[in-house]
Amino acid sequence: MSRRIDAHTHVFARATAEFPRDVTPQFPADSEAPVEGLLAAMEANDIDQAVLVQLGGGTVANHAYLRRCLAEHPGRFLGIGLIPDDCDDVDAHMRGLCDGSDIIGLRLRSLGGPTDPFARVDRDSVATWPIWECAARNDYVLWLYVEAAEAHLLPYMVGAFPSVRVVLNHLGICPGRGRFSIDDNGRPHISVPSYNPAMHTSWRLAQYENVSVLLSGQYAFSREPHPYRDIAGWHGGLVGSFGCSRLMWASDYPWIADDPGYEATAGVLSDLLPNVGDADRARLMGESAAQILRFPPVAD
Image (cartoon, rainbow, N blue to C red; front, side, top):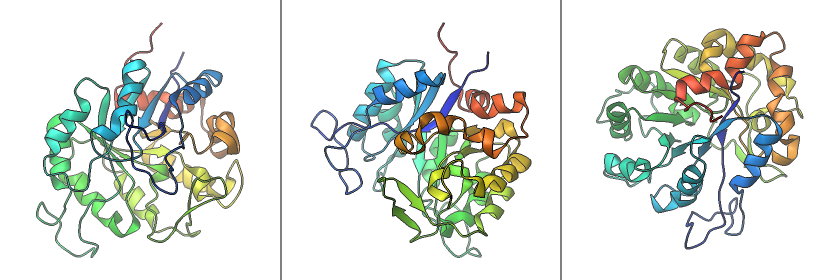
C-alpha cells in the first residue's frame, strides 16, 4: 500500500522558558498547535508521515519544541528549520539544529538578492549564497517561499546549485509585497491577481530536476470556499510542467484544522485534479515526498 505523507505542517507550543519562541500578534504567547492534534488528524485520515516546518524564530533554542516532537516520534516526521537573519556561521547553526534530530533543511522567505532583474547575480550580490553553499555541502533541503520581487533570482540560484533539493512552497506562488493579510480565522491570506506573473517563474523552474512544488495553501490564494475550484487550472498547469513525481500534497496544518478541516484538505486534489490516475495520485499524496525528502520506511 502506498504511503500517504503530509509534506508541510506546523506545530508549536505556548511560549515558555522550556519552549521559547517569537511572540507576534499572529502568534501570541498563549497560542499553540500541539503535535498531538496533528497526529490525531493524521490517524483519522490515514496519513502515515509528515514534515514539520518551524514557526516562531530561527535560533537553535527556538527549535526546542520542533526537536522534541521529532525525538518523541522517530520515523514519523522530518523537520525543516529556520535561520536567524544575522547568522554569520551557517554550518554551525545547521549542526546545532540537525545533530541528534531529523531536521533535513531550512526554510527561506528571502534570498537577499537584487530586485533588478538585469542586475548581476553571484556570491557577492546574494546574501543567502552561503546558505546555498552549506546546503550543497551537507545535502540539506531548501524550502522556499520568497516574494515576487525576488522570483527572478530563483532560476539563477537553482542553476548555480544543481545538487540542492529545492521545494517551492504553496503552489510555487511568490506573493507580492503588501498582499499578505490575516483572514477572519487568523490564518494567512494572499491577494493574488487572476493573472499571476509568478506562473512564469514556476514553469521556468520545471526544467530543473532538483526543484519540486508543494500542492498546498489553497485557502490562502483562492477567492472561493473549499474545494477552491478557481485555482484548479493552476494545479493542472503544475502537473503538466513538473509531473506528479515532483509535486507533493500538503495540508498546511493547523491553518486548515477548522476550515475546511483536515479531512476535506486531504481530499482536495480529487476535486482540483479529477483526471489524475491512481498511480499519479499516489505519487501526489505521498510517494513523491517519500522519494524527494527521503522519508524512512513506515514502521510496521
